[in-house]
Amino acid sequence: MESTIIKSRNFNASFGTNHVVKNVNIDIPRNQIVAVMGPSGCGKTTYLRCINRMHELIPGASSSGEMRLNNEDIYQMHPIFVRLKIGMVFQRPNPFPNLSIYDNVIAGYKLNGIKLPKADRDRIVEHSLTSVALWNEVKDSLNKKGSFLSGGQQQRLCIARCVAMEPEVILFDEPTSALDPISTSTVEELFHELKKNYTLVIVTHNMQQAARVSDKTAFFFLGELVEYDETKTMFTNPKDNRTQNYITGRFS
Amino acid sequence: MAQLETELQLLKTEAVNMWSLVNSQLSKARQAFLTFDKDLAREVVLKEKRVNGSELKIDRDCENIFALFCPVAIDLRFLLAVLKINSNLERIGDISEGIAKYIIDAEAPFSEELLNVTRILPMYEEAVNMLDDTQAAFEREDTVLARSVFKKDDFLDSVNKGSNKVLEAHLKDHPGDTAQALWLMSIIRKLERVGDGCKNVAEEIIFYLEAKVLKHKNKFV
Image (tube, rainbow over all chains, first blue to last red; front, top):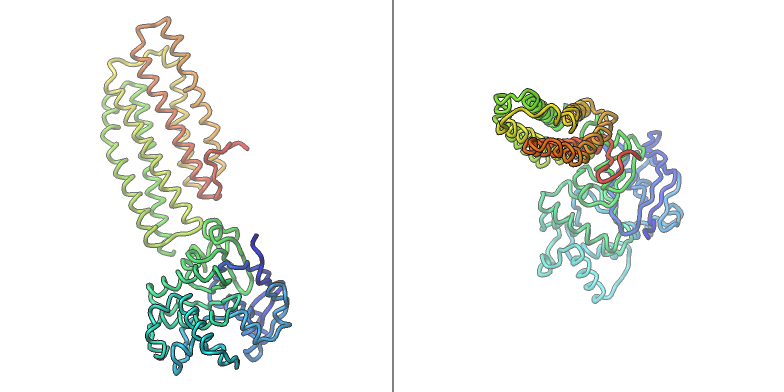
């Protein structure tokens, strides 16, 4: 039976007086891929950033309501711990430019002051790069800088950096919008592999990507969660007219 | 209007034109059958090529829209429905041609009594009505009208089902009508298939508009 890993209840987020996420209730099932889509400014990225408490880093930002990880209140946990459990991958690949590929993968440990024996570091690097299908491509150049890789490889390196911390959930904010179609396809294939061990939440503007990769899809509009259902249902028979208009390109 | 919407609108117009053409074929074959008009029957046979051409054009247009626009939701259902409606209409076009060919090959007009006992004339009229109704339902996006087609098909089925016994009884008294009876039986079978085709089309209209799959289900629940 599917179990819920992230649960939001009456969740709201604002920037000052600008109320951008309104009363969102959502259950994200473990080891599934949930796509979050909606027009620009609908609150989907803000909602994503609330899941691992990145939202609160912005001056003037606030939130209310419940956000739970494994039924524990995320907002009662230490934010660093939350971000260890809930990793994030951004729109543009952002490996540390001065670090080697190897050091990029274990950057999370270094930055958090976690010291590991060399053998453990090697194992984590190999495991993380293998799980993002990058190991074979870079195993002979681990000491080269991450920024020498192609855009698609850099994004997979960023995913490996995230995976290295063994999170339970990985949040992706438009992870392929800066990639070419072949790299996009590689990353999409990777999603299917990753979901065996992690829960993925992906904000995407690319509706076909949402349709291709996700198990469930949420549609946000004007800060509200309009509809949340199985992706197959959302793309064949959405219940709300706003969803239908959006996915069929009839949005005005 | 978005490009996809324009393409779908054009496709709908093409489908309606195909419907009108098939409707005209079925009605002309009926007229040729009623009046034993071999010229009209030949016209139906000649025009069958246009039906085939129209089917190919609609198939190609659907394929292009799938490839270029990746339609979803109601647009996807519309395209899937049009593809299936298209092949059903083409089959009804074939049936019209088949009936017209019988008229061309027949040696004499059908006997009045045989026409009456088999109820083939009201059956034919109902088949044409059903095709009309599906076209109107599609154009007006009217699922109530589409559903009314299921009930009408019952009449066609009952005529078809009873035809063996009716013809058997008739032939006992009129053994000379055997050849004509066999022709009529074939036409009755064809009209029954027109009814089935219209029913399939009505199911597709409901699928497209309501996202309900009625295939292989009791339509009256």
